[in-house]
Length: 444
Image: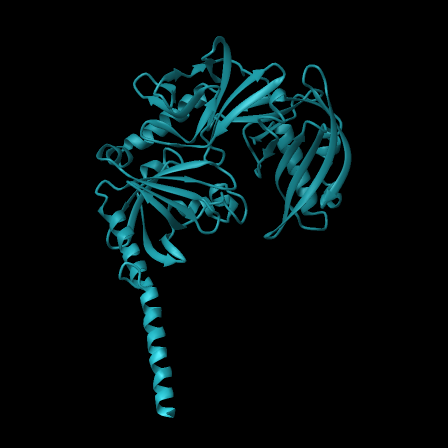
Protein backbone atom coordinates (compact mmCIF):
# COMPACT_ATOMS: atom_id res chain seq x y z
CA UNK A 1 0.00 0.00 0.00
CA UNK A 2 2.85 2.36 0.91
CA UNK A 3 4.51 1.64 -2.47
CA UNK A 4 1.28 2.41 -4.34
CA UNK A 5 0.94 5.72 -2.43
CA UNK A 6 4.52 6.78 -3.25
CA UNK A 7 4.09 5.87 -6.92
CA UNK A 8 0.87 7.92 -7.03
CA UNK A 9 2.62 11.03 -5.69
CA UNK A 10 5.46 10.50 -8.14
CA UNK A 11 3.02 10.26 -11.05
CA UNK A 12 1.26 13.42 -9.88
CA UNK A 13 4.52 15.36 -9.79
CA UNK A 14 5.36 14.19 -13.31
CA UNK A 15 1.94 15.34 -14.53
CA UNK A 16 2.37 18.78 -12.91
CA UNK A 17 5.83 19.15 -14.45
CA UNK A 18 4.40 18.27 -17.84
CA UNK A 19 1.61 20.84 -17.40
CA UNK A 20 4.19 23.48 -16.41
CA UNK A 21 6.24 22.71 -19.51
CA UNK A 22 3.11 22.91 -21.64
CA UNK A 23 2.23 26.31 -20.11
CA UNK A 24 5.70 27.66 -20.92
CA UNK A 25 5.28 26.83 -24.57
CA UNK A 26 3.66 29.48 -26.77
CA UNK A 27 3.45 28.68 -30.45
CA UNK A 28 5.59 25.68 -29.64
CA UNK A 29 8.48 27.77 -28.25
CA UNK A 30 9.91 28.24 -24.80
CA UNK A 31 10.42 31.82 -23.46
CA UNK A 32 14.16 31.77 -24.16
CA UNK A 33 13.47 30.57 -27.69
CA UNK A 34 10.97 33.38 -28.28
CA UNK A 35 13.48 35.94 -26.96
CA UNK A 36 16.21 34.57 -29.25
CA UNK A 37 13.82 34.68 -32.21
CA UNK A 38 12.83 38.30 -31.48
CA UNK A 39 16.47 39.40 -31.17
CA UNK A 40 17.40 37.69 -34.42
CA UNK A 41 14.42 39.30 -36.14
CA UNK A 42 15.55 42.81 -35.12
CA UNK A 43 19.20 42.10 -35.97
CA UNK A 44 18.12 41.00 -39.43
CA UNK A 45 15.90 44.08 -39.84
CA UNK A 46 18.77 46.42 -38.97
CA UNK A 47 21.36 44.70 -41.17
CA UNK A 48 19.18 43.88 -44.17
CA UNK A 49 17.96 47.43 -44.83
CA UNK A 50 20.21 47.92 -47.87
CA UNK A 51 19.90 51.72 -47.78
CA UNK A 52 20.34 52.03 -44.02
CA UNK A 53 18.08 53.96 -41.68
CA UNK A 54 17.06 57.56 -41.03
CA UNK A 55 16.71 58.14 -37.29
CA UNK A 56 14.98 60.89 -35.32
CA UNK A 57 15.79 61.52 -31.66
CA UNK A 58 14.22 63.92 -29.15
CA UNK A 59 16.10 64.85 -25.96
CA UNK A 60 14.27 65.26 -22.66
CA UNK A 61 16.11 67.98 -20.67
CA UNK A 62 17.45 70.57 -23.12
CA UNK A 63 17.84 70.86 -26.85
CA UNK A 64 15.30 69.55 -29.26
CA UNK A 65 15.14 67.15 -32.19
CA UNK A 66 18.05 65.56 -34.02
CA UNK A 67 18.28 63.44 -37.14
CA UNK A 68 20.80 60.74 -38.00
CA UNK A 69 21.67 58.43 -40.83
CA UNK A 70 22.67 54.94 -39.59
CA UNK A 71 23.93 51.87 -41.40
CA UNK A 72 24.26 48.61 -39.41
CA UNK A 73 26.30 45.56 -40.45
CA UNK A 74 26.34 41.93 -39.33
CA UNK A 75 29.65 42.40 -37.48
CA UNK A 76 27.97 44.73 -34.95
CA UNK A 77 29.39 47.88 -36.53
CA UNK A 78 27.27 50.96 -37.15
CA UNK A 79 28.21 54.00 -39.23
CA UNK A 80 26.30 57.21 -38.58
CA UNK A 81 26.02 60.88 -39.43
CA UNK A 82 24.18 63.55 -37.41
CA UNK A 83 22.61 66.94 -38.06
CA UNK A 84 24.11 68.84 -35.09
CA UNK A 85 25.70 71.32 -37.49
CA UNK A 86 26.98 71.43 -41.05
CA UNK A 87 30.53 70.42 -40.05
CA UNK A 88 29.49 67.35 -38.07
CA UNK A 89 27.09 66.35 -40.86
CA UNK A 90 30.11 65.84 -43.13
CA UNK A 91 31.58 63.15 -40.86
CA UNK A 92 30.78 59.44 -40.90
CA UNK A 93 31.50 58.01 -37.46
CA UNK A 94 31.84 54.27 -36.85
CA UNK A 95 31.16 52.54 -33.54
CA UNK A 96 29.72 49.24 -32.29
CA UNK A 97 26.24 48.17 -31.31
CA UNK A 98 24.47 45.16 -29.84
CA UNK A 99 20.93 43.85 -30.04
CA UNK A 100 20.35 42.37 -26.61
CA UNK A 101 17.57 41.35 -24.24
CA UNK A 102 17.55 43.75 -21.26
CA UNK A 103 14.05 43.22 -19.86
CA UNK A 104 12.96 43.74 -23.48
CA UNK A 105 14.69 43.61 -26.90
CA UNK A 106 17.11 46.56 -26.93
CA UNK A 107 19.64 48.28 -29.15
CA UNK A 108 22.76 49.31 -27.23
CA UNK A 109 25.36 51.62 -28.77
CA UNK A 110 28.25 50.39 -26.63
CA UNK A 111 31.19 52.46 -27.87
CA UNK A 112 31.38 56.25 -27.98
CA UNK A 113 29.69 57.81 -31.00
CA UNK A 114 27.62 60.84 -32.05
CA UNK A 115 24.72 59.78 -29.83
CA UNK A 116 26.92 59.93 -26.74
CA UNK A 117 27.62 63.63 -27.32
CA UNK A 118 24.04 64.40 -26.30
CA UNK A 119 24.51 62.94 -22.86
CA UNK A 120 28.10 63.85 -22.16
CA UNK A 121 28.19 64.85 -18.47
CA UNK A 122 30.92 67.43 -19.11
CA UNK A 123 29.10 70.69 -19.90
CA UNK A 124 32.17 71.97 -21.74
CA UNK A 125 32.16 68.97 -24.10
CA UNK A 126 28.98 69.71 -26.06
CA UNK A 127 27.31 72.54 -24.12
CA UNK A 128 24.86 70.25 -22.35
CA UNK A 129 23.84 70.54 -18.71
CA UNK A 130 26.42 69.55 -16.15
CA UNK A 131 26.21 65.82 -15.26
CA UNK A 132 23.19 65.08 -17.50
CA UNK A 133 24.00 66.53 -20.92
CA UNK A 134 20.89 67.08 -23.04
CA UNK A 135 18.87 64.26 -21.48
CA UNK A 136 19.55 61.56 -24.02
CA UNK A 137 20.43 57.86 -24.12
CA UNK A 138 22.63 55.32 -25.88
CA UNK A 139 20.65 52.26 -24.72
CA UNK A 140 17.19 51.99 -26.25
CA UNK A 141 14.35 49.56 -25.66
CA UNK A 142 12.43 48.48 -28.76
CA UNK A 143 8.75 49.20 -28.21
CA UNK A 144 7.19 48.27 -31.55
CA UNK A 145 7.71 47.91 -35.28
CA UNK A 146 5.12 49.17 -37.72
CA UNK A 147 6.02 48.48 -41.34
CA UNK A 148 9.38 50.12 -42.06
CA UNK A 149 9.43 52.02 -38.75
CA UNK A 150 10.92 50.86 -35.43
CA UNK A 151 10.02 52.88 -32.33
CA UNK A 152 12.33 52.86 -29.32
CA UNK A 153 12.61 54.59 -25.95
CA UNK A 154 15.77 55.42 -24.00
CA UNK A 155 16.35 53.31 -20.90
CA UNK A 156 17.69 56.11 -18.66
CA UNK A 157 16.29 59.44 -19.87
CA UNK A 158 13.26 58.14 -21.84
CA UNK A 159 14.53 59.83 -25.00
CA UNK A 160 12.34 58.64 -27.91
CA UNK A 161 14.16 57.31 -30.96
CA UNK A 162 12.51 56.42 -34.29
CA UNK A 163 14.24 54.40 -36.99
CA UNK A 164 12.80 54.51 -40.52
CA UNK A 165 14.16 52.45 -43.41
CA UNK A 166 15.90 54.80 -45.81
CA UNK A 167 15.25 54.99 -49.51
CA UNK A 168 18.06 55.03 -52.08
CA UNK A 169 17.51 58.79 -52.48
CA UNK A 170 17.77 59.38 -48.73
CA UNK A 171 20.96 57.33 -48.49
CA UNK A 172 22.49 59.40 -51.31
CA UNK A 173 21.49 62.62 -49.53
CA UNK A 174 22.71 61.75 -46.02
CA UNK A 175 26.00 60.15 -47.11
CA UNK A 176 27.04 63.02 -49.37
CA UNK A 177 27.79 66.71 -48.92
CA UNK A 178 24.12 67.46 -49.61
CA UNK A 179 23.29 66.84 -45.94
CA UNK A 180 25.81 69.43 -44.74
CA UNK A 181 24.94 71.89 -47.50
CA UNK A 182 21.25 71.79 -46.61
CA UNK A 183 21.94 72.47 -42.92
CA UNK A 184 24.32 75.25 -43.89
CA UNK A 185 21.81 76.81 -46.28
CA UNK A 186 18.97 76.84 -43.75
CA UNK A 187 21.22 78.11 -40.95
CA UNK A 188 22.48 80.94 -43.16
CA UNK A 189 18.90 81.82 -44.11
CA UNK A 190 18.02 82.13 -40.41
CA UNK A 191 21.13 84.26 -39.77
CA UNK A 192 20.36 86.55 -42.73
CA UNK A 193 16.63 86.75 -41.93
CA UNK A 194 16.28 86.74 -38.11
CA UNK A 195 12.73 88.12 -38.16
CA UNK A 196 10.55 85.97 -40.38
CA UNK A 197 6.79 85.65 -40.62
CA UNK A 198 3.90 84.23 -42.59
CA UNK A 199 0.65 85.97 -43.41
CA UNK A 200 -2.38 84.66 -41.56
CA UNK A 201 -4.30 82.42 -44.02
CA UNK A 202 -7.54 84.04 -42.80
CA UNK A 203 -6.25 87.62 -42.81
CA UNK A 204 -3.54 88.56 -45.28
CA UNK A 205 -2.79 91.80 -43.41
CA UNK A 206 -1.92 90.02 -40.14
CA UNK A 207 1.61 88.74 -39.59
CA UNK A 208 2.40 85.57 -37.65
CA UNK A 209 5.95 85.59 -36.33
CA UNK A 210 8.02 82.51 -37.22
CA UNK A 211 10.91 81.59 -34.96
CA UNK A 212 13.45 78.98 -36.06
CA UNK A 213 16.32 78.34 -33.67
CA UNK A 214 18.92 76.10 -35.32
CA UNK A 215 21.30 76.10 -32.35
CA UNK A 216 22.05 72.52 -31.33
CA UNK A 217 21.17 73.21 -27.68
CA UNK A 218 17.92 75.11 -28.23
CA UNK A 219 16.52 73.76 -31.50
CA UNK A 220 12.88 74.82 -31.75
CA UNK A 221 10.22 76.09 -34.17
CA UNK A 222 7.45 78.51 -33.13
CA UNK A 223 4.51 80.39 -34.62
CA UNK A 224 3.66 83.46 -32.53
CA UNK A 225 0.79 85.90 -32.98
CA UNK A 226 -1.17 88.50 -31.02
CA UNK A 227 -4.92 88.29 -30.47
CA UNK A 228 -5.93 91.49 -28.70
CA UNK A 229 -3.83 91.55 -25.53
CA UNK A 230 -3.23 87.82 -25.67
CA UNK A 231 -0.14 86.22 -27.19
CA UNK A 232 -0.81 82.91 -28.96
CA UNK A 233 2.10 80.58 -29.54
CA UNK A 234 2.34 77.16 -31.15
CA UNK A 235 5.71 75.48 -31.07
CA UNK A 236 7.63 72.26 -31.28
CA UNK A 237 11.08 70.80 -31.77
CA UNK A 238 12.55 69.92 -35.14
CA UNK A 239 15.37 68.09 -36.86
CA UNK A 240 16.92 68.59 -40.27
CA UNK A 241 15.79 66.32 -43.09
CA UNK A 242 16.43 65.71 -46.78
CA UNK A 243 13.60 68.16 -47.56
CA UNK A 244 14.68 70.84 -45.10
CA UNK A 245 13.22 70.78 -41.58
CA UNK A 246 11.07 68.00 -40.11
CA UNK A 247 8.76 69.09 -37.29
CA UNK A 248 9.01 66.18 -34.85
CA UNK A 249 5.43 66.91 -33.79
CA UNK A 250 3.06 68.77 -36.14
CA UNK A 251 2.50 72.43 -35.22
CA UNK A 252 -1.06 73.73 -35.43
CA UNK A 253 -2.10 77.30 -36.08
CA UNK A 254 -5.84 77.82 -36.38
CA UNK A 255 -7.16 75.31 -38.87
CA UNK A 256 -3.75 74.66 -40.39
CA UNK A 257 -1.47 71.82 -39.27
CA UNK A 258 2.15 72.11 -40.37
CA UNK A 259 4.54 69.15 -40.61
CA UNK A 260 7.73 70.51 -42.17
CA UNK A 261 9.63 73.47 -43.54
CA UNK A 262 10.78 72.95 -47.12
CA UNK A 263 14.17 74.31 -48.19
CA UNK A 264 14.42 75.34 -51.84
CA UNK A 265 18.17 75.38 -52.41
CA UNK A 266 17.83 76.90 -55.88
CA UNK A 267 15.85 79.99 -54.82
CA UNK A 268 17.21 79.90 -51.23
CA UNK A 269 13.73 80.19 -49.76
CA UNK A 270 11.85 78.42 -46.98
CA UNK A 271 8.24 77.28 -47.22
CA UNK A 272 6.00 76.09 -44.40
CA UNK A 273 4.24 72.90 -45.53
CA UNK A 274 0.86 71.84 -44.17
CA UNK A 275 -0.43 68.32 -43.70
CA UNK A 276 -2.46 68.78 -46.91
CA UNK A 277 0.67 69.68 -48.88
CA UNK A 278 -0.01 73.41 -49.25
CA UNK A 279 3.08 75.65 -49.11
CA UNK A 280 3.40 79.09 -47.49
CA UNK A 281 6.56 81.13 -48.04
CA UNK A 282 8.41 82.53 -45.04
CA UNK A 283 8.75 86.28 -45.50
CA UNK A 284 11.36 88.51 -43.92
CA UNK A 285 11.03 91.67 -41.84
CA UNK A 286 13.73 94.16 -40.94
CA UNK A 287 12.34 94.44 -37.39
CA UNK A 288 10.78 92.07 -34.83
CA UNK A 289 7.10 91.33 -35.45
CA UNK A 290 6.30 91.41 -31.71
CA UNK A 291 8.34 93.17 -28.96
CA UNK A 292 10.11 90.89 -26.52
CA UNK A 293 8.54 92.34 -23.36
CA UNK A 294 5.09 91.26 -24.63
CA UNK A 295 6.25 87.66 -25.02
CA UNK A 296 7.55 87.23 -21.48
CA UNK A 297 5.31 84.95 -19.49
CA UNK A 298 3.66 83.45 -22.57
CA UNK A 299 6.25 82.48 -25.16
CA UNK A 300 9.34 82.94 -22.97
CA UNK A 301 9.74 82.70 -19.21
CA UNK A 302 13.47 83.13 -18.81
CA UNK A 303 16.74 84.35 -20.28
CA UNK A 304 19.69 82.08 -19.46
CA UNK A 305 23.09 83.74 -19.48
CA UNK A 306 25.71 81.04 -20.20
CA UNK A 307 28.91 80.19 -18.38
CA UNK A 308 31.45 82.07 -20.47
CA UNK A 309 33.93 84.92 -20.40
CA UNK A 310 32.74 86.38 -23.73
CA UNK A 311 29.43 85.91 -25.53
CA UNK A 312 27.50 87.60 -28.37
CA UNK A 313 25.50 90.54 -26.97
CA UNK A 314 27.76 91.05 -23.95
CA UNK A 315 29.27 94.54 -23.74
CA UNK A 316 32.79 95.16 -22.47
CA UNK A 317 31.29 96.72 -19.34
CA UNK A 318 29.29 93.57 -18.55
CA UNK A 319 32.27 91.31 -19.33
CA UNK A 320 34.46 93.28 -16.91
CA UNK A 321 31.82 93.32 -14.17
CA UNK A 322 31.07 89.62 -14.53
CA UNK A 323 34.79 88.86 -14.33
CA UNK A 324 35.09 91.01 -11.19
CA UNK A 325 32.14 89.23 -9.57
CA UNK A 326 33.49 85.79 -10.54
CA UNK A 327 36.89 86.62 -9.06
CA UNK A 328 35.34 87.98 -5.86
CA UNK A 329 33.34 84.83 -5.12
CA UNK A 330 36.26 82.60 -6.13
CA UNK A 331 38.62 84.30 -3.68
CA UNK A 332 36.03 85.23 -1.04
CA UNK A 333 36.66 82.26 1.21
CA UNK A 334 34.46 79.56 -0.31
CA UNK A 335 36.38 78.96 -3.57
CA UNK A 336 33.20 79.10 -5.68
CA UNK A 337 33.10 79.27 -9.50
CA UNK A 338 30.35 81.40 -11.06
CA UNK A 339 28.59 79.40 -13.78
CA UNK A 340 25.41 80.20 -15.75
CA UNK A 341 22.74 82.65 -14.53
CA UNK A 342 19.03 82.19 -15.23
CA UNK A 343 16.78 85.28 -15.17
CA UNK A 344 13.34 83.82 -14.51
CA UNK A 345 10.24 86.04 -14.93
CA UNK A 346 6.83 85.57 -13.31
CA UNK A 347 4.66 88.06 -15.15
CA UNK A 348 1.58 87.39 -13.03
CA UNK A 349 3.37 88.25 -9.77
CA UNK A 350 5.75 90.75 -11.42
CA UNK A 351 8.80 89.04 -9.94
CA UNK A 352 12.28 88.24 -11.24
CA UNK A 353 14.34 85.40 -9.79
CA UNK A 354 18.03 85.20 -10.63
CA UNK A 355 19.29 81.63 -10.21
CA UNK A 356 23.09 81.67 -10.28
CA UNK A 357 24.80 78.29 -10.49
CA UNK A 358 28.02 78.12 -8.52
CA UNK A 359 30.47 75.25 -8.26
CA UNK A 360 32.98 74.15 -5.64
CA UNK A 361 35.03 71.65 -7.56
CA UNK A 362 32.56 69.23 -9.16
CA UNK A 363 29.78 70.06 -6.67
CA UNK A 364 27.09 72.44 -7.88
CA UNK A 365 25.02 74.82 -5.74
CA UNK A 366 22.34 77.43 -6.38
CA UNK A 367 22.47 81.08 -5.33
CA UNK A 368 19.05 82.72 -5.56
CA UNK A 369 18.35 86.47 -5.74
CA UNK A 370 14.73 87.66 -5.65
CA UNK A 371 13.24 90.85 -7.11
CA UNK A 372 9.95 92.51 -7.81
CA UNK A 373 9.59 94.72 -10.86
CA UNK A 374 7.45 97.46 -12.33
CA UNK A 375 6.88 97.70 -16.07
CA UNK A 376 6.48 101.12 -17.67
CA UNK A 377 4.22 101.85 -20.63
CA UNK A 378 7.19 101.68 -23.02
CA UNK A 379 8.17 98.23 -21.69
CA UNK A 380 11.05 99.47 -19.51
CA UNK A 381 11.55 97.38 -16.36
CA UNK A 382 12.65 98.59 -12.93
CA UNK A 383 13.82 95.85 -10.55
CA UNK A 384 13.69 96.06 -6.73
CA UNK A 385 15.82 93.62 -4.73
CA UNK A 386 13.91 91.74 -2.01
CA UNK A 387 15.97 88.79 -0.76
CA UNK A 388 18.90 86.42 -1.21
CA UNK A 389 18.26 82.71 -0.67
CA UNK A 390 20.17 79.46 -0.83
CA UNK A 391 23.81 80.31 -1.33
CA UNK A 392 22.85 83.82 -2.46
CA UNK A 393 23.61 85.32 0.95
CA UNK A 394 27.13 83.85 0.81
CA UNK A 395 28.08 85.53 -2.46
CA UNK A 396 25.89 88.66 -2.54
CA UNK A 397 28.76 90.98 -1.64
CA UNK A 398 30.92 89.43 -4.37
CA UNK A 399 28.10 89.87 -6.90
CA UNK A 400 27.94 93.63 -6.22
CA UNK A 401 29.49 94.68 -9.58
CA UNK A 402 26.55 93.03 -11.35
CA UNK A 403 23.71 93.30 -8.85
CA UNK A 404 24.20 96.27 -6.50
CA UNK A 405 25.78 98.54 -9.11
CA UNK A 406 23.56 97.68 -12.08
CA UNK A 407 20.55 95.29 -11.75
CA UNK A 408 19.42 96.86 -8.47
CA UNK A 409 20.06 100.43 -9.56
CA UNK A 410 19.21 100.82 -13.26
CA UNK A 411 16.13 100.63 -15.49
CA UNK A 412 16.30 98.05 -18.28
CA UNK A 413 14.91 97.51 -21.73
CA UNK A 414 14.57 93.97 -23.04
CA UNK A 415 15.21 93.40 -26.71
CA UNK A 416 16.17 90.72 -29.19
CA UNK A 417 19.80 90.12 -30.10
CA UNK A 418 20.74 87.99 -33.09
CA UNK A 419 23.76 85.76 -32.52
CA UNK A 420 25.93 86.55 -35.56
CA UNK A 421 27.55 83.11 -35.38
CA UNK A 422 24.45 80.92 -35.34
CA UNK A 423 21.51 83.19 -36.21
CA UNK A 424 19.83 82.27 -32.92
CA UNK A 425 17.61 85.03 -31.55
CA UNK A 426 18.68 85.75 -27.98
CA UNK A 427 17.17 87.93 -25.26
CA UNK A 428 19.18 90.98 -24.23
CA UNK A 429 19.13 93.30 -21.20
CA UNK A 430 20.05 96.93 -21.97
CA UNK A 431 20.61 99.45 -19.16
CA UNK A 432 18.84 102.77 -19.76
CA UNK A 433 21.20 104.72 -17.51
CA UNK A 434 24.33 102.90 -18.69
CA UNK A 435 23.70 101.83 -22.31
CA UNK A 436 27.23 100.41 -22.44
CA UNK A 437 26.04 97.71 -20.01
CA UNK A 438 24.30 94.96 -22.01
CA UNK A 439 24.17 91.19 -21.70
CA UNK A 440 22.28 88.45 -23.50
CA UNK A 441 21.26 84.82 -23.11
CA UNK A 442 19.11 82.03 -24.46
CA UNK A 443 15.37 82.63 -24.56
CA UNK A 444 13.55 79.71 -22.97
